[in-house]
Length: 176
Image (cartoon, rainbow, N blue to C red; front, side, top):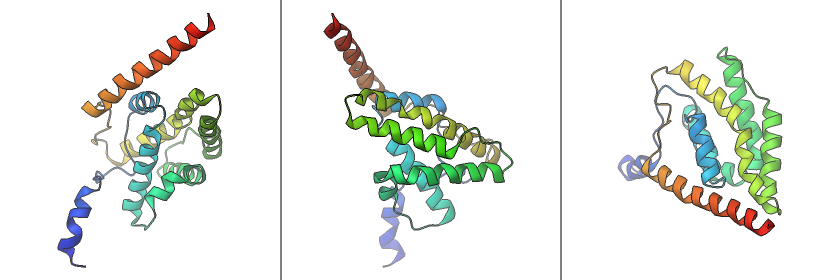
């Protein structure tokens, strides 16, 4: 295959900023987007974190399998992030096994009557992202921290917020 024939595919992939090591996103944006999309932002977060690893380490890993089988691949990702932080003299603020176990348990609740609780699995990603943000800040102090909400983000927030509102009102009304 010639380089010209592979170029359009390459341009469709998300660009990784040169200085950061992992996917940058503010804790607020990660929390809000995860809650308002009922956890659908989390596969995007996992995909993006693995994409940065793949690009940085020039690995031939399957990003979709890392997301599809996330309950098996979250721990290796969290462990890798912790090791990167330690190597950069940054004190990680999370336990990879604790965050992975908590995240997996909450994700598995999505197949139970407690499915709404699974949206809070993001709470186990926040300490990981806090460490990612510290790593990225040390690697490139001037990088974009990805803290602003795009139009698509705002649409998801409005729609998800309304669904949460209706769900809560429905729970309150049904108890009366």
